[in-house]
Length: 386
Image (cartoon, helix red, strand yellow):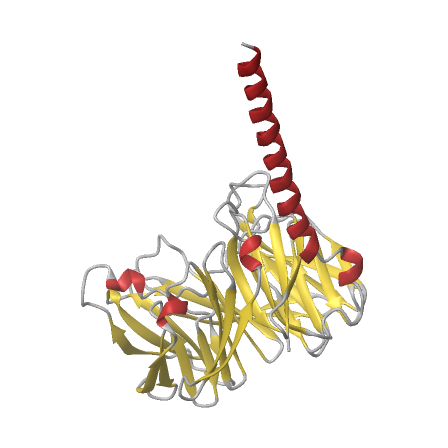
């Protein structure tokens, strides 16, 4: 009887010891890469950083969290855990970066600062306004107190002062051009699927300007962000001819005339149209006379913006595109693709925009130790810093 009791005591001791070692190992790994707020506020914090990744739990996870990972030029990580923000994103401008969580906006690098704002659950869009030298960020804030009208809260800084206002509608899609935010608004109950386009100017005050209202047909649904030049608004959509037919919309800002072009049809098998939906929130890029569009299969098509004709295509690395977590960014003459599977190292690939040639690969080391099978965070944004 005594020997049995002794065996149980030894077994329990081993279990406690193993649990303790596991706990210490996991936490030491976490502490090893942690970037404290004081470190992030240093002016030179971004000097050696190549990219930033934003992960968060969804709104239904309580308590939730978000994580901003900073990847240096060697592929080594540091990170900051924050409060959750579903669909949160980051913005990069020169030697500054904006990150956000449920209750705060952080500006890193030059003119670093922390700004507290109204609690938000869902992000939408952010960017940088050159003429005022300010970042802005927009949130999907939900219904107003009257339960009828919708609101998208917007925040932007003028110097050290944080300003705010309310965009009084749900933003279906958005874009940015010439220091101006462009939005598209639709009503799901509207069978003709009217798209209302507006400009939003942020200065000392917010100003909303009507641009155009057009119909793209029943069930028309955006597949990309809005892309804008001096004359037109462009975006990819499907639904008007069925979900399998991808089209380009081209709206003249002056005379309100809309043109549509069939770009591609996915009909090889039933699920193909669903799988072709882009995995990134910003899957298209307007550069000079061409629009580059990356679908869910990782095929990038080069579209002539004048006539909607495809003038070339190429495929990104299929293994990376089929990874569990991935996000891409168009930047200059390149496409950057981040990919990883939970519990494993990640990778940043750089492709030449013109022809899709792979020109650089950067392993992202040890990120899988934090984003693993037990973590419940999702990848919402990826941006190149340097």
